[in-house]
Image (cartoon, rainbow, N blue to C red):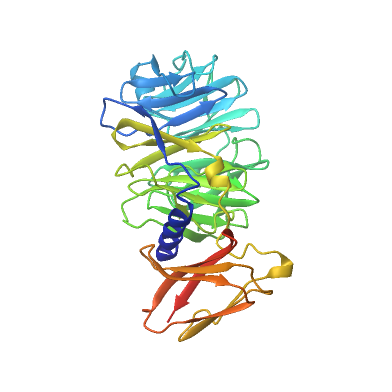
Amino acid sequence: MIKKLFILTLLLTTISSACFAQWKKVYDSPSTRPISLVFIIGNNILIRDQGGILLSTDDAKNWKFVDTTFGMKVVSKIIAKDSLLLASSLFKGVYRSLDSGRTWIAPSKWFNDYTTDIILSGKNILGILPRPDQIIVSKDDGVTWDTATKSPPYILSFNGNIDALGIIGNTTFAFYAGKLYTSYDYGETWKFKSDSCPTGASPTVYNDKILSNSLDGNIAVSEDSGMKWKTVFTGQQGINHVGRIRVSGKILIAPVKNEGVIFSYDSGNTWIFKNDGLGSVLGVYDISLSSDFVYCGADSGRVFRRPISEFNDIESPVSLLTDAFQLKVYPNPANQFTNFEFGRALANGSLSIYDITGKEVLNISNINTGKYTFQRDNTPGGTYMYMLKEHGKKLAFGKLVLE
Protein backbone atom coordinates (compact mmCIF):
# COMPACT_ATOMS: atom_id res chain seq x y z
CA MET A 1 0.00 0.00 0.00
CA ILE A 2 2.75 2.47 0.95
CA LYS A 3 4.69 1.73 -2.21
CA LYS A 4 1.54 2.22 -4.27
CA LEU A 5 0.83 5.60 -2.68
CA PHE A 6 4.43 6.67 -3.10
CA ILE A 7 4.40 5.77 -6.78
CA LEU A 8 1.12 7.57 -7.37
CA THR A 9 2.51 10.66 -5.68
CA LEU A 10 5.62 10.63 -7.82
CA LEU A 11 3.64 10.18 -10.98
CA LEU A 12 1.21 12.95 -10.18
CA THR A 13 4.11 15.26 -9.34
CA THR A 14 5.92 14.38 -12.56
CA ILE A 15 3.01 14.79 -14.94
CA SER A 16 1.28 17.71 -13.24
CA SER A 17 4.03 20.07 -12.08
CA ALA A 18 3.27 22.49 -14.87
CA CYS A 19 -0.42 22.63 -13.93
CA PHE A 20 -0.37 22.87 -10.14
CA ALA A 21 1.05 25.45 -7.79
CA GLN A 22 2.66 24.56 -4.49
CA TRP A 23 1.80 25.09 -0.85
CA LYS A 24 2.29 28.76 -0.02
CA LYS A 25 3.31 29.93 3.44
CA VAL A 26 0.85 32.48 4.86
CA TYR A 27 1.98 32.63 8.50
CA ASP A 28 5.39 32.19 10.11
CA SER A 29 5.48 32.43 13.89
CA PRO A 30 8.54 33.46 15.89
CA SER A 31 7.70 30.39 17.98
CA THR A 32 9.19 27.03 17.00
CA ARG A 33 6.16 25.11 18.22
CA PRO A 34 3.73 23.61 15.69
CA ILE A 35 0.43 25.18 14.71
CA SER A 36 -1.93 22.42 15.78
CA LEU A 37 -5.28 24.17 15.29
CA VAL A 38 -6.67 25.95 12.22
CA PHE A 39 -10.33 26.98 12.03
CA ILE A 40 -12.21 28.96 9.38
CA ILE A 41 -15.60 30.63 9.70
CA GLY A 42 -16.74 32.82 6.82
CA ASN A 43 -13.86 35.15 5.98
CA ASN A 44 -12.21 34.74 9.38
CA ILE A 45 -9.24 32.41 9.90
CA LEU A 46 -8.34 31.41 13.46
CA ILE A 47 -5.14 29.62 14.47
CA ARG A 48 -3.67 28.67 17.83
CA ASP A 49 -0.06 29.71 18.30
CA GLN A 50 2.06 29.44 21.42
CA GLY A 51 0.87 32.88 22.58
CA GLY A 52 -2.87 32.28 22.13
CA ILE A 53 -5.49 32.61 19.40
CA LEU A 54 -4.70 34.68 16.30
CA LEU A 55 -7.24 35.98 13.80
CA SER A 56 -6.96 37.04 10.16
CA THR A 57 -9.86 38.83 8.48
CA ASP A 58 -8.08 39.70 5.21
CA ASP A 59 -7.34 36.42 3.46
CA ALA A 60 -4.34 35.52 5.66
CA LYS A 61 -2.43 38.70 4.81
CA ASN A 62 -2.34 40.03 8.38
CA TRP A 63 -2.72 38.36 11.76
CA LYS A 64 -3.40 39.65 15.26
CA PHE A 65 -3.82 38.03 18.67
CA VAL A 66 -7.43 38.18 19.86
CA ASP A 67 -6.99 36.19 23.11
CA THR A 68 -3.77 35.39 24.95
CA THR A 69 -5.25 34.00 28.18
CA PHE A 70 -3.85 30.70 29.38
CA GLY A 71 -6.95 28.71 28.52
CA MET A 72 -6.94 29.89 24.92
CA LYS A 73 -3.26 28.99 24.56
CA VAL A 74 -4.21 25.34 24.93
CA VAL A 75 -7.42 25.16 22.85
CA SER A 76 -7.69 21.74 21.19
CA LYS A 77 -10.74 22.19 18.94
CA ILE A 78 -13.22 24.86 17.78
CA ILE A 79 -16.74 24.18 16.50
CA ALA A 80 -19.52 26.46 15.23
CA LYS A 81 -23.21 26.52 16.10
CA ASP A 82 -24.73 29.15 13.86
CA SER A 83 -22.94 32.38 14.87
CA LEU A 84 -21.65 30.87 18.13
CA LEU A 85 -18.12 29.44 18.38
CA LEU A 86 -17.11 27.02 21.13
CA ALA A 87 -13.53 26.04 21.92
CA SER A 88 -12.53 23.01 24.00
CA SER A 89 -9.55 23.90 26.15
CA LEU A 90 -6.95 21.83 27.93
CA PHE A 91 -7.39 24.23 30.82
CA LYS A 92 -10.63 23.18 32.45
CA GLY A 93 -13.46 24.35 30.29
CA VAL A 94 -15.14 25.39 27.06
CA TYR A 95 -14.72 28.96 25.83
CA ARG A 96 -17.37 30.80 23.79
CA SER A 97 -17.32 33.52 21.13
CA LEU A 98 -20.34 35.43 19.85
CA ASP A 99 -18.51 37.47 17.19
CA SER A 100 -16.74 34.94 14.94
CA GLY A 101 -13.72 34.65 17.18
CA ARG A 102 -12.87 38.31 17.78
CA THR A 103 -13.52 38.04 21.51
CA TRP A 104 -13.88 35.03 23.82
CA ILE A 105 -15.85 34.40 27.01
CA ALA A 106 -14.21 32.27 29.70
CA PRO A 107 -16.15 29.23 30.98
CA SER A 108 -18.78 30.00 33.60
CA LYS A 109 -18.02 26.64 35.17
CA TRP A 110 -14.44 25.44 35.67
CA PHE A 111 -14.34 21.69 35.40
CA ASN A 112 -12.04 19.53 37.45
CA ASP A 113 -10.17 18.56 34.32
CA TYR A 114 -9.55 19.68 30.75
CA THR A 115 -11.83 19.04 27.76
CA THR A 116 -10.35 17.08 24.87
CA ASP A 117 -13.14 17.07 22.29
CA ILE A 118 -16.39 18.89 21.58
CA ILE A 119 -19.21 18.32 19.06
CA LEU A 120 -22.71 19.51 18.24
CA SER A 121 -25.41 16.82 18.67
CA GLY A 122 -28.86 18.14 17.81
CA LYS A 123 -29.40 21.14 20.06
CA ASN A 124 -26.98 19.74 22.63
CA ILE A 125 -23.26 20.40 22.80
CA LEU A 126 -21.16 17.46 23.99
CA GLY A 127 -17.65 17.46 25.39
CA ILE A 128 -15.18 14.97 26.86
CA LEU A 129 -13.56 15.09 30.28
CA PRO A 130 -10.79 12.48 30.45
CA ARG A 131 -10.35 12.18 34.24
CA PRO A 132 -12.62 10.67 35.27
CA ASP A 133 -13.79 9.58 31.83
CA GLN A 134 -17.01 11.52 31.33
CA ILE A 135 -19.14 12.91 28.55
CA ILE A 136 -20.52 16.34 29.44
CA VAL A 137 -23.65 17.94 27.99
CA SER A 138 -24.74 21.54 27.58
CA LYS A 139 -28.30 22.45 26.61
CA ASP A 140 -27.83 26.23 26.70
CA ASP A 141 -25.13 26.85 24.09
CA GLY A 142 -22.22 26.10 26.39
CA VAL A 143 -23.14 28.40 29.27
CA THR A 144 -23.68 25.55 31.77
CA TRP A 145 -22.63 21.91 31.66
CA ASP A 146 -23.57 18.63 33.31
CA THR A 147 -22.31 15.09 33.10
CA ALA A 148 -24.40 12.98 30.73
CA THR A 149 -26.94 12.13 33.43
CA LYS A 150 -28.09 8.73 32.19
CA SER A 151 -24.80 7.28 30.97
CA PRO A 152 -24.39 3.68 32.13
CA PRO A 153 -21.49 3.03 34.52
CA TYR A 154 -19.57 0.83 32.10
CA ILE A 155 -18.66 3.72 29.82
CA LEU A 156 -16.65 5.12 32.73
CA SER A 157 -15.09 1.86 33.87
CA PHE A 158 -12.13 1.41 31.52
CA ASN A 159 -8.57 2.55 32.01
CA GLY A 160 -7.95 5.13 29.31
CA ASN A 161 -9.64 8.16 27.83
CA ILE A 162 -12.72 8.58 25.69
CA ASP A 163 -10.98 9.19 22.39
CA ALA A 164 -13.48 11.16 20.32
CA LEU A 165 -17.11 11.87 19.54
CA GLY A 166 -18.92 11.87 16.20
CA ILE A 167 -22.28 12.05 14.42
CA ILE A 168 -23.88 9.75 11.83
CA GLY A 169 -27.29 11.09 10.87
CA ASN A 170 -29.29 11.17 14.11
CA THR A 171 -26.85 8.90 15.93
CA THR A 172 -24.08 10.19 18.18
CA PHE A 173 -21.18 7.86 18.82
CA ALA A 174 -18.12 7.73 21.05
CA PHE A 175 -14.83 5.97 20.42
CA TYR A 176 -13.58 4.69 23.74
CA ALA A 177 -10.56 2.44 24.34
CA GLY A 178 -11.10 0.53 21.10
CA LYS A 179 -14.85 0.27 21.68
CA LEU A 180 -17.79 2.06 20.10
CA TYR A 181 -20.77 3.43 22.02
CA THR A 182 -23.87 5.02 20.49
CA SER A 183 -26.49 7.50 21.68
CA TYR A 184 -29.89 8.25 20.18
CA ASP A 185 -30.86 11.08 22.52
CA TYR A 186 -28.10 13.58 21.72
CA GLY A 187 -25.54 12.21 24.12
CA GLU A 188 -27.57 11.72 27.29
CA THR A 189 -27.66 7.89 27.29
CA TRP A 190 -25.17 5.49 25.74
CA LYS A 191 -25.15 1.85 24.63
CA PHE A 192 -22.28 -0.44 23.71
CA LYS A 193 -22.14 -1.30 20.00
CA SER A 194 -18.76 -2.74 18.95
CA ASP A 195 -15.36 -3.64 20.36
CA SER A 196 -13.47 -3.53 17.04
CA CYS A 197 -13.13 0.19 16.38
CA PRO A 198 -9.70 1.88 16.03
CA THR A 199 -8.01 3.30 19.11
CA GLY A 200 -7.49 7.04 19.23
CA ALA A 201 -10.00 7.70 16.49
CA SER A 202 -11.55 10.98 15.45
CA PRO A 203 -14.40 10.09 13.08
CA THR A 204 -15.47 11.63 9.79
CA VAL A 205 -18.64 10.56 7.97
CA TYR A 206 -18.59 10.49 4.18
CA ASN A 207 -20.93 8.71 1.74
CA ASP A 208 -22.37 6.47 4.49
CA LYS A 209 -18.88 5.48 5.60
CA ILE A 210 -17.10 6.26 8.85
CA LEU A 211 -13.45 7.18 8.39
CA SER A 212 -11.29 7.29 11.49
CA ASN A 213 -7.87 8.79 11.93
CA SER A 214 -5.68 7.50 14.75
CA LEU A 215 -2.65 8.23 16.87
CA ASP A 216 -0.80 5.26 15.37
CA GLY A 217 -0.70 6.86 11.93
CA ASN A 218 -3.48 4.83 10.29
CA ILE A 219 -6.80 5.59 8.63
CA ALA A 220 -9.55 2.97 8.86
CA VAL A 221 -12.94 2.81 7.14
CA SER A 222 -16.20 1.22 8.25
CA GLU A 223 -19.12 0.71 5.87
CA ASP A 224 -21.49 -0.81 8.47
CA SER A 225 -21.78 1.98 11.05
CA GLY A 226 -18.71 0.94 12.99
CA MET A 227 -19.08 -2.83 13.36
CA LYS A 228 -16.18 -3.79 11.08
CA TRP A 229 -13.13 -1.78 9.99
CA LYS A 230 -10.44 -2.02 7.35
CA THR A 231 -7.20 -0.06 7.28
CA VAL A 232 -6.80 2.04 4.13
CA PHE A 233 -3.72 4.09 5.02
CA THR A 234 -0.67 3.27 7.15
CA GLY A 235 1.93 5.86 8.14
CA GLN A 236 5.47 5.14 7.05
CA GLN A 237 7.40 5.91 10.21
CA GLY A 238 5.32 4.27 12.92
CA ILE A 239 5.50 7.32 15.21
CA ASN A 240 3.02 9.48 13.36
CA HIS A 241 -0.60 10.30 13.86
CA VAL A 242 -3.23 11.33 11.33
CA GLY A 243 -5.18 14.49 12.15
CA ARG A 244 -8.86 15.18 11.52
CA ILE A 245 -10.02 14.31 8.01
CA ARG A 246 -11.70 17.14 6.09
CA VAL A 247 -14.12 16.90 3.16
CA SER A 248 -14.19 19.08 0.03
CA GLY A 249 -16.74 17.84 -2.48
CA LYS A 250 -15.53 14.39 -3.53
CA ILE A 251 -12.08 14.88 -2.00
CA LEU A 252 -10.93 13.88 1.49
CA ILE A 253 -7.86 15.66 2.92
CA ALA A 254 -5.91 14.86 6.09
CA PRO A 255 -2.70 15.95 7.87
CA VAL A 256 -0.06 13.40 8.88
CA LYS A 257 2.55 14.21 11.52
CA ASN A 258 6.06 13.94 10.02
CA GLU A 259 4.71 13.02 6.57
CA GLY A 260 2.74 16.02 5.30
CA VAL A 261 -0.69 16.13 3.64
CA ILE A 262 -2.60 13.24 2.07
CA PHE A 263 -5.81 13.24 0.06
CA SER A 264 -8.24 10.71 -1.38
CA TYR A 265 -10.42 10.96 -4.48
CA ASP A 266 -12.25 7.61 -4.02
CA SER A 267 -14.11 7.85 -0.70
CA GLY A 268 -11.02 7.08 1.35
CA ASN A 269 -9.90 3.83 -0.25
CA THR A 270 -6.67 5.26 -1.70
CA TRP A 271 -4.53 8.08 -0.27
CA ILE A 272 -1.92 10.19 -2.07
CA PHE A 273 0.67 12.60 -0.66
CA LYS A 274 0.60 16.24 -1.80
CA ASN A 275 3.62 17.92 -0.23
CA ASP A 276 5.17 20.02 -3.01
CA GLY A 277 6.03 23.38 -1.51
CA LEU A 278 6.23 22.21 2.10
CA GLY A 279 9.95 21.45 1.75
CA SER A 280 11.28 19.89 4.94
CA VAL A 281 8.27 21.08 6.98
CA LEU A 282 6.34 17.80 6.89
CA GLY A 283 4.99 17.90 10.43
CA VAL A 284 1.38 18.86 9.58
CA TYR A 285 -1.07 18.79 12.49
CA ASP A 286 -4.40 20.28 11.42
CA ILE A 287 -6.26 21.21 8.25
CA SER A 288 -9.21 23.51 7.64
CA LEU A 289 -11.06 24.50 4.46
CA SER A 290 -12.42 27.78 3.19
CA SER A 291 -14.50 28.10 0.03
CA ASP A 292 -11.33 28.49 -2.03
CA PHE A 293 -8.33 27.19 -0.07
CA VAL A 294 -6.96 24.37 2.04
CA TYR A 295 -5.07 25.67 5.09
CA CYS A 296 -2.73 23.51 7.15
CA GLY A 297 -0.98 24.14 10.46
CA ALA A 298 2.56 22.78 10.53
CA ASP A 299 5.83 22.50 12.41
CA SER A 300 7.94 25.53 13.30
CA GLY A 301 4.90 27.75 13.78
CA ARG A 302 3.91 27.88 10.12
CA VAL A 303 0.62 27.91 8.24
CA PHE A 304 0.41 26.98 4.55
CA ARG A 305 -2.39 27.06 2.02
CA ARG A 306 -3.17 26.08 -1.57
CA PRO A 307 -6.31 26.21 -3.76
CA ILE A 308 -8.90 23.50 -3.21
CA SER A 309 -9.20 23.25 -6.99
CA GLU A 310 -5.77 21.61 -7.12
CA PHE A 311 -7.17 18.67 -5.18
CA ASN A 312 -10.54 18.47 -6.92
CA ASP A 313 -8.95 18.47 -10.37
CA ILE A 314 -7.03 15.24 -9.75
CA GLU A 315 -8.39 12.26 -11.65
CA SER A 316 -8.31 8.78 -10.19
CA PRO A 317 -5.47 6.47 -11.34
CA VAL A 318 -7.66 4.31 -13.54
CA SER A 319 -8.76 4.51 -17.13
CA LEU A 320 -10.35 7.86 -17.94
CA LEU A 321 -11.61 6.69 -21.32
CA THR A 322 -15.27 6.55 -22.30
CA ASP A 323 -17.17 3.29 -22.66
CA ALA A 324 -16.54 3.43 -26.41
CA PHE A 325 -12.78 3.59 -25.84
CA GLN A 326 -11.87 1.39 -22.89
CA LEU A 327 -8.22 0.71 -22.17
CA LYS A 328 -7.21 -2.89 -21.43
CA VAL A 329 -3.83 -3.69 -19.90
CA TYR A 330 -3.01 -7.42 -19.80
CA PRO A 331 -1.39 -9.44 -18.42
CA ASN A 332 -0.91 -7.34 -15.31
CA PRO A 333 1.06 -8.45 -13.29
CA ALA A 334 3.26 -9.34 -16.23
CA ASN A 335 6.35 -11.43 -16.83
CA GLN A 336 7.83 -10.82 -20.28
CA PHE A 337 5.32 -8.47 -21.97
CA THR A 338 2.14 -6.46 -21.45
CA ASN A 339 -0.49 -5.54 -24.03
CA PHE A 340 -2.04 -2.08 -24.04
CA GLU A 341 -5.27 -2.39 -26.03
CA PHE A 342 -6.92 0.96 -26.74
CA GLY A 343 -10.25 -0.08 -28.29
CA ARG A 344 -9.58 2.02 -31.40
CA ALA A 345 -6.56 3.37 -33.21
CA LEU A 346 -4.94 6.31 -31.46
CA ALA A 347 -4.09 9.45 -33.39
CA ASN A 348 -0.61 10.66 -32.45
CA GLY A 349 -0.76 8.75 -29.18
CA SER A 350 2.04 8.26 -26.66
CA LEU A 351 2.72 5.84 -23.80
CA SER A 352 5.08 6.59 -20.91
CA ILE A 353 6.13 4.27 -18.09
CA TYR A 354 7.65 5.53 -14.82
CA ASP A 355 9.62 3.65 -12.16
CA ILE A 356 9.34 4.02 -8.38
CA THR A 357 11.66 7.05 -8.35
CA GLY A 358 9.45 8.90 -10.84
CA LYS A 359 11.97 8.40 -13.65
CA GLU A 360 10.53 7.81 -17.10
CA VAL A 361 11.88 4.43 -18.23
CA LEU A 362 9.95 4.22 -21.49
CA ASN A 363 8.34 6.69 -23.87
CA ILE A 364 6.71 5.51 -27.08
CA SER A 365 5.41 8.34 -29.26
CA ASN A 366 3.46 8.59 -32.51
CA ILE A 367 1.24 5.58 -31.74
CA ASN A 368 -1.43 5.33 -34.46
CA THR A 369 -2.68 1.81 -33.84
CA GLY A 370 -5.24 0.26 -31.50
CA LYS A 371 -2.73 -1.84 -29.57
CA TYR A 372 0.83 -1.63 -28.27
CA THR A 373 2.86 -4.47 -26.73
CA PHE A 374 5.39 -3.47 -24.11
CA GLN A 375 8.37 -5.86 -24.08
CA ARG A 376 10.00 -6.08 -20.70
CA ASP A 377 13.51 -6.96 -22.00
CA ASN A 378 15.94 -5.92 -19.24
CA THR A 379 13.47 -3.86 -17.21
CA PRO A 380 13.78 -4.92 -13.53
CA GLY A 381 10.84 -6.39 -11.70
CA GLY A 382 8.79 -4.03 -9.56
CA THR A 383 5.85 -1.64 -9.59
CA TYR A 384 5.57 1.00 -12.31
CA MET A 385 3.03 3.55 -13.52
CA TYR A 386 1.88 4.10 -17.08
CA MET A 387 0.51 7.25 -18.72
CA LEU A 388 -1.43 7.26 -22.00
CA LYS A 389 -1.92 10.43 -24.03
CA GLU A 390 -3.40 11.42 -27.38
CA HIS A 391 -2.36 14.69 -29.06
CA GLY A 392 -0.69 15.50 -25.74
CA LYS A 393 -3.96 15.16 -23.80
CA LYS A 394 -3.98 12.73 -20.87
CA LEU A 395 -6.34 9.80 -21.44
CA ALA A 396 -5.49 7.30 -18.71
CA PHE A 397 -2.92 6.24 -16.16
CA GLY A 398 -2.53 3.37 -13.75
CA LYS A 399 -0.29 0.74 -12.19
CA LEU A 400 1.81 -1.87 -13.99
CA VAL A 401 3.48 -4.69 -12.03
CA LEU A 402 6.42 -6.64 -13.49
CA GLU A 403 7.13 -9.94 -11.75
